[in-house]
Amino acid sequence: MKNRERFFLVLLTIFASMFLISFYICKEQYAQINRMKRIIKAYELFAMGKYPEFSNYVEQNRLNELLYLKKDLQKRLFLDYYANAVYHFNLGNYAEAADLFKKALEQIESNDPKSSEILYLLCVSLTNANRLGEARLVLEQSIENMPNTPFKKKVMELLAEIYKKQGDHDKADKILKGGAK
Image 1: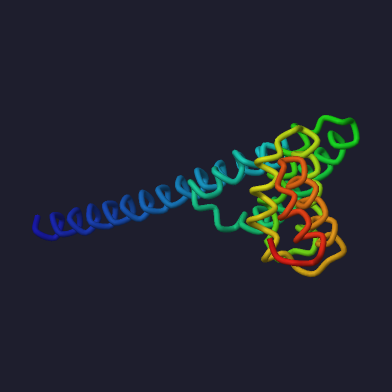
Image 2: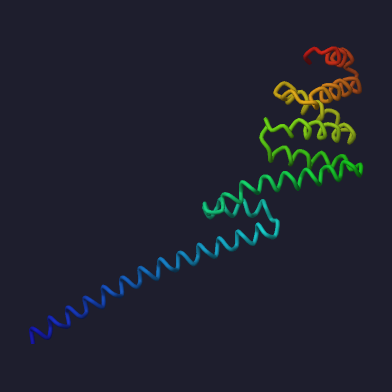
């Protein structure tokens, strides 16, 4: 009987070990399936153009394998915001264009060569939307750090124009003569 008990004990140990191994494998497979479901959901958000939701979803679920799309996302968002802003600007919807130019500026680095052009168009939009105070503030804060581009002179002229519209002719003359604000 002792041999028989040993046999069953060994057999039960083998079955228990096999159960634990299969449970562990199943648990791993279940975790991988859930991760794949989250990745598919993220791809769906990206494909549907829901970029802010996509970005938040990738961060919340730590989907590091999709970070390359997040970098590409900034370029896409910039192009979308910029194209829509120019569209509204050309239609004369300056308030809407200004909001979209702001969003486009948020998507690129401040030292990007395109930032000067967008900043200029933003301030023209603000000026045409009669938001002179906001345009003046944006220009005053960014003019010192603006790289030397063809738009820097236009920005200076626009700031002088805003000063004139607000009755500050001394500052306007100083800028037009090449001085600092």
